[in-house]
Image 1 (spheres, rainbow, N blue to C red):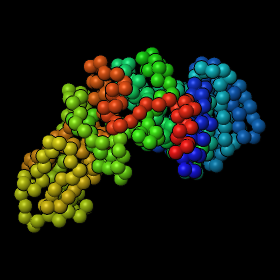
Image 2 (cartoon, one colour; image 1 turned 120 degrees about the vertical axis):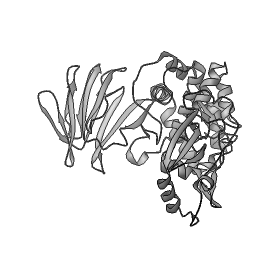
Image 3 (spheres, rainbow, N blue to C red; image 1 turned 90 degrees about the horizontal axis):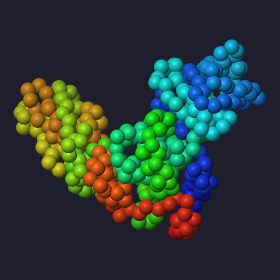
Image 4 (tube, rainbow, N blue to C red; image 1 turned 45 degrees about the vertical axis):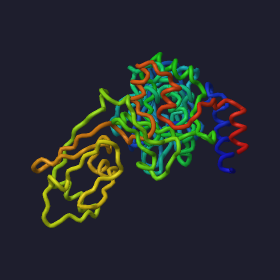
Amino acid sequence: MIRKFIFFIIIISIFQNLKSQDIRIGLYHKFDVKTLVFKPLKGAYYLENDKGFKEKIRGNDVIYITLVGDQISVWGIEKHMGLSQKIAISPKRENSMYSLEPAFPALKKRRYEGKLEIAIHPEDKLTIINQVAFEKYVASVVEAESGTRAKHEYYKSQAIISRTYALNHIDRHENENFNLCDDVHCQVYKGIQTRNKTIHSAVSTTKGLVITDENRQLITAAFHSNSGGFTINSEDVWSAAMPYLRGKKDPYWADQHNSHWTDTILLSDWVDFMEHIGIQLPDKYDPNTIFSFNQSVRVRNMTVAGQLVPLKHVRNKFKLRSTFFSIYPENDKLIVKGRGYGHGVGLSQEGAMQMARMGKSYEEIIEFYYHNVELMNIDSTTYLTRLLSQ
């Protein structure tokens, strides 16, 4: 009860007005960035550090930010702006925009809005934080996770899912001084991309809407690319059995980009893997018999020499697109023919896109892939009161 109260107090304090409140995102989280190039694209900015230095950054300026030992070095076009432990770059006005380009390591340039904070990470790299309006973050996530060619109703469903996920994991990186990171550990976020009008309309139309379970708690809004024809239970992938993440037949999966796939595994690599996970193979065996495996509906395990092998371990080891596959031995290799892409839990993005093309509403899409859930508005005082009173 106490944890629930604290959790929703955090949500209330941060998101009382989702239109104007910000979320803090850790950028380039999986990279050890040591040098970063900042350039304003629209509007003016102010750079400040923890030693009282303050400088205006104008449109033609390029700022080089480098980790030097245990300090951050900042260079402008004509001068050194000093050493510090932390810097902040703030826009003078709303709707300003800047680019970031890591130079070490060299990574693709991206565009962002909002405030930028840079500090020193304990693991000898820069901690880069983008403080951005929450709904703008949601719109960027929707595009990064699902592209720009889907229907309006699909984007509505993805916006609600991304919003729910963000709020449900708002303290995931609390010990690093930001809310969420920008990669698949949280949700993919690449800053400003195309400013797709359909996506922004979908986010605006569904503003504040989240998905809750039968107890009016935010759900774990899991999603994947393509189910292969069947979604699966949450406990088939993770440890927790969640009542709203139940496997079911998915008729919307076929004839999509990720519906089918084929891969190859060397027989020698497969045998090494079997030995590594403790599978006892007979002294003499026929690979065509012992390693053949057919999966017409989703299962959790395959059987090899009378012993269970979890399919998720096979997928992780050989980097397969999904656990929904069959194996056909062929000479010195195994041909793996699979269906779907991703863990298979929750919403299938390609299936949801197909539902939208068929005229289904975002409510129908969400209700199909999540079992016994309800759409609620996080701004609702009644909703929050009911949650806190449980």
